[in-house]
Every structure is written in C-alpha cells, then in structure tokens.
Amino acid sequence: MNENVPPIEAIDLHKHFGQLEVLRGIDFTVDAQEVVCVVGPSGSGKSTLLRCVNLLEVPTAGKVLVEGIDMTDPETDVDAVRARIGMVFQQFNLFPHLTVLRNLTIAQQKVLKRSEDEANEEARKVLERVGLSDKVDEFPIRLSGGQQQRVAIARSLSMNPDMMLFDEPTSALDPELVGEVLDVMRGLAQEGMTMMVVTHEMGFARQVGDRVVFMDEGIIVEEGPPDDVLLNPQHERTQRFLQAVLRQ
Amino acid sequence: MKKTTKQKLRRAILYLVFVLAVVLFAVLADWGQIQTSFFNLDVAAEMLPRVFTVAAKNTIVYTFTAFSFGLVLALVLALMKRSEIRPYRWVANSYIELFRGLPALVTIIFVAYGLPIALDIRIPGGLLGQGTVGLGLVAAAYMAETLRAGIEAVPRGQMEAARSLGMSRGAAMRSIVLPQAFRIIIPPLTNELVLLIKDTSLFFVLGSTPVNKELTKFGRDLMTQKFNATPLVVIALVYLIITLPLTRLVAQLEKRAARAR
Ligand SMILES: Nc1ncnc2c1ncn2[C@@H]1O[C@H](COP(=O)(O)OP(=O)(O)OP(=O)(O)O)[C@@H](O)[C@H]1O
Ligand SMILES: [Mg+2]
Image (cartoon, rainbow over all chains, first blue to last red; front, side, top):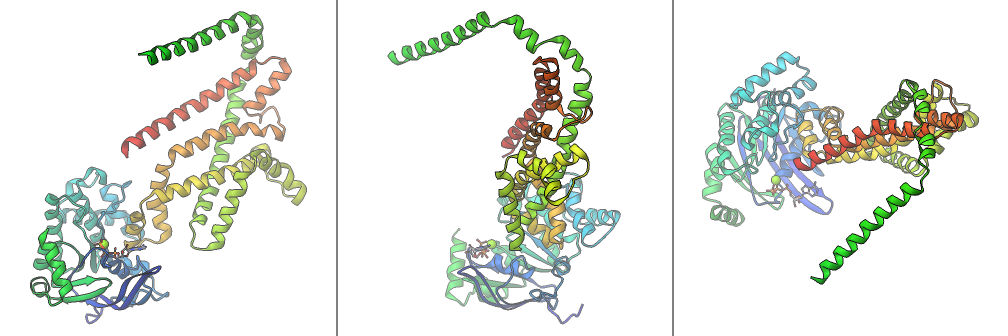
C-alpha cells in the first residue's frame, strides 16, 4: 500500500433520498492511523456519510476513495474493498443463528478463503483481545449488549481490516455497558487502527479522537483537533449543538 | 340481576337443544346399518397392511416430492420477486397470480394431459412425475409469497453486516438471510405441507395402477368394490394420523414464536 494515499477520501460527496438532500457536498480525508470522530445533531447525515464510505449507500454524486480506489467506479470490486473496512453498527447486527465463533469465522472463510482452522485460530485471538474468550460457543442472544458489541468489533477485526467504521457503537447500550466497548475502541486506537467514529460520546472524542468533524444539515460545518472544536467552537451552529449536548 | 337470569335461561335452552338433538339422533339412527356401512371391521381388516404400505406411503412420497419441487421453485420466484431487474419481478408476480388463481386440479390436468396434447411434452415418471409437478407448480406460488415475507422479516442490518464484511449478495443471502428466513417461516411452510398432503387426493384424475394409488383413490376404489363406506372412514383416520401431529406442531411453534416476541 502506498503510504501517501489516505485510507479514506471523500470528494464533493452528495447523497439524495428522493427529494431529500442528505449530504450536500462533503470533502474530507482520514489519514492512516488517524481517529476521526464525527459528531452532529440527529438527521445531519452522519450515518449516511459513514455508509457511503463502504458503499452501503451509493452516493448520488461525488467520489469516495478507499486507499485510493474509487468505490463508485463500476469496475471496482466493492466486495474486496469492503473486506478491508471493518464496520460496527449501532444495533450490533450479529448473526443470531450462528454461535459467536461462527459469527467471526464465516466471512473469513467465505471472503478471505481461510481454512476452518485458520479462521478459528484468528477468531479466538480477537475474542481474547476483546475479553470474550469464554463466550466462543454462546449464541449472541445470550450476551449482554456490551458483550454483543464487543463480539461485533471482534467480527470485524477477524478480517484484519485496514480501517474501522463505527456508527454510534454505544448508543444502544445501557449506560453501565458503554465503558467496556469504549475501552476496546481505545485499545484499537492506541494500536494505530485507522478509525472513523460517529459518536455522541464527547469524552471519548476528546480523549481518543485525533480530529473531530462537526456535521449539520449535510455539510461539514467545522473540523479540527478535538479541544478546538469541542471546547472552542468557531461556528454558531457548533456552539448551539454542544450546549444542547452538555445540558443533557 | 334480571340480565343474568335471562342469560342463564338462554344457556339452559341451548344445552337442552343440544341434548335433544343427540337423543333424537341416537333413537332415530339405524345403529346396525351405521356400523356395517361405516365401521365394518372385516372390510377394515382387508385394507391392512396395504393402506399403510401402499396408499399412505404413496401419499407421503407424493407430498414430499411436490413440496421439495415447489420449495425450490418458490425460492427462485421469491428471489426473482426481490430482484432489481424489473422483468424478473414481473415474471415472478405473473406466475404467482396465475397459479394462485387457478384450481390445482386444472394445473394437474394441464401437466398430465394438456402438455402432451398441445406440445407433445410428456413429463416422465408417470403419476408421480406429472402429479407432483402439477401440484408443485401450484404450491410454489403460495410458498414464494411465504418465503418473500420471511426474507423481508429478516432485519436489513443482517444483509448490511454481511455485505460490510465483504460477502457477495448471493453469499449473504445464502448463509445469513435465508437460514433466518426459513426459521421464521417454518410454521406457514408446515401448513403448506398439510395442504399438500390433502391435495395429493387430486391425483385421482390421473388414473392409477394397484401400486401407485394414494390414500383417497385407494379408499374410494375399495368403497365401490365393497359397496361399503368403511374404507373412507379408515383413510380419513390415516389422514388424521399424518396431519394432526403436523398441525399440532405448527400451533406449538407459533405459540413459542409469540412468546419469543
Ligand atoms: N434509506 C433512506 N431512505 C430515506 N431517507 C433516509 C434513508 N436513510 C436516511 N434517511 C434520512 O436521511 C437523513 C440523514 O440520516 P442519517 O441517518 O445519515 O442521520 P444521522 O446524522 O446519522 O442521524 P442520527 O444521529 O439520528 O443517527 C435523515 O433525515 C433520514 O431520515
Ligand atoms: Mg445515524
């Protein structure tokens, strides 16, 4: 991989749902090993932006480059690129009919064509890393929300991705379970994982984020180092949003 | 106070009518006649063991063959119905509307007699082949709708999670969505199976040999031969032996699904 090519680059990205213009010209970059936190009010297009990166949503106009590969180019093997992008959802989206172990091995075997033994070994390794070695044979429904989300992170990690996308990974969790998931994410950041994190956890954004992006109404209003954006916002909309968040 | 007295009275009258009807039936009915015509043990004994080894076995074989064929076709139709390509959706929709709108008997006759006459196409396998293809074509239309509903009942996030791991649409469908969809539709599919068991009785139009009769044909032929209705009673019992466990199973599965929700 060329070190100079940023893992994620969006160029004048637009997305419409029918008449609704959800993304209205987004330009941004995530550099290697960088942790970018995306914040903003509900409906501002954060999830849509994240989902455009791995083409779960197809942009209406503009480009998304992943490691320099144009995702919107019809010639691109999107599945192959997606295999290198981990994605963690708000609702975990674990496969309920499969055991934890199988949740982690199925894509390794079907996409990366690893043998069952290799896949199992990798799965056990990442499960240990997220502290769930004892849950290999459980079904997801038997786990707490925090454990399920850690399994979901492990599922992505088992593919040895180059970067990770998180869409409000702790928003569906009871407050006392948020910490264990953020700890895992913090660990990933420290090991140098490239991460794009949509979150309402301002504490996490400040501590772990290298950069914070504030979105509103489909555009990036403001971005910069966490302390600048979160403690000393320049734009009135950012100020209003942060005040509203702090009041909660 | 007045109202409850009235209700009690109505209740009493209804019970009285019921008891009177039973007594009247018991008195008027010719029990000897009923027993010899419907519960003739000699006739029933003659049906053994062939009612099980031939007739019931054939009914079950026909049912499962039609069900398997229908299910495969239904899967194709359900996926076509969800295709991004409009002509595929159109074909699937037309198929489903057509075969749900026709009597199964018409389809069976068409496959067995219409195709050879019209196009010189003869489905191989005799009664088994032609009957089950005809019935399977119809069953597929119903099961396609069931399957589509099952696929749509699987949360969208499942497909998205699978795709985000790099799985192709087909692989995600096969190993993530469909297994969950099937689990959801086990009760309606079992119902469909019960309907098919009963519909194999339509195969009587295809004629028969001593070895390929299913339950209804077997019972009916024996009835005319013996001039006695006992064979019908016996095959009715055999049908119930097959279908009751299945309908009970469905009821239980549905109860469990309701509890899980
Ligand atoms: N598939 C879709 N079809 C139609 N409209 C959609 C679709 N997905 C999202 N939207 C709309 O796009 C807008 C932006 O949605 P998006 O999920 O990106 O916002 P968000 O910033 O992630 O909000 P939240 O903080 O609530 O998750 C919303 O108004 C939403 O209703
Ligand atoms: Mg969102």
